[in-house]
Length: 343
Picture 1: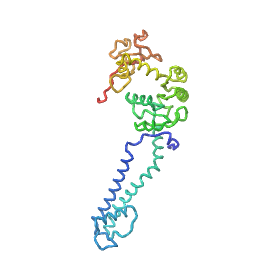
Picture 2 (picture 1 turned 90 degrees about the vertical axis):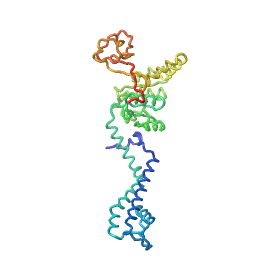
Picture 3 (picture 1 turned 180 degrees about the vertical axis):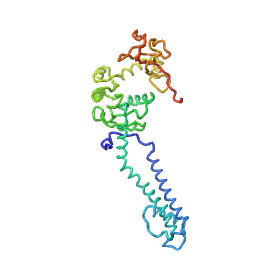
Picture 4 (picture 1 turned 60 degrees about the horizontal axis):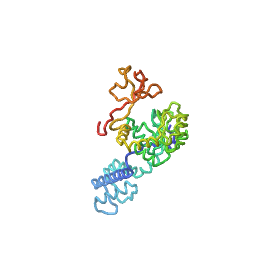
């Protein structure tokens, strides 16, 4: 049974048809029904009588009859008198009248049924969503995180955006993402976003204290959830880690380092940007060590290996501990990304 209380906080992606396009389509359908009715009357005009005139039914009379007929006004001045005309009215004109009426009241019906339709779609989404990524905050950092996820083989069905800003949520919805309106520091909002079934949470808020509260709330609800958080100041990193964040990115310092490097080595910045862009050039990726690679050195592989993940430890490639690869190791390496025009 769909839960109507979720309609409002949760918003499913909208249709790609614009309101103007929908209106024009309905007008064309209505005009088509009116024209079809008029043509039926005109070509069968011998079976119709105008009670106010002895003249034969003209095309204008046919459109007049079609107008008052499909709108159910029915003045009774032009009426079918033969059995054939009445049969045509029953078989063709009556369905066209219904199409005309349904088209014009469609907007009202759609508004009345939209809440039920959204409730059904939300209920179906909640029953199916698994191993998705929740992005809290859809500002500059949140959008960049979503772009990276989408460029790294994720789909729009795998991402849920949580924010309180309607403009940001509209932008996310336009991209085809499911959005949840609300403050992510509240457990009820994260539950609606499906935090218990999620595989990762990206905290991209604008305030460090908010990031801490979101992380604490999420960790309490989902002990095994991978949480990646962004903070503005490095002095707050330990607070995020104590709150349960698996990874913490210091946005201010990272940007500052890139700015400093750009003054003396601008090419370094371009390479770093290239590595962080998964859909073109080169990108940093992670994979499991292959059986044929076990026992060898990561420095001798065809891939450019940057680090080895062994258990919960991240070891740089120059560490003596990873001179010999072991089963279960994971490699962080540089891979060639697909170009935008490639299949």
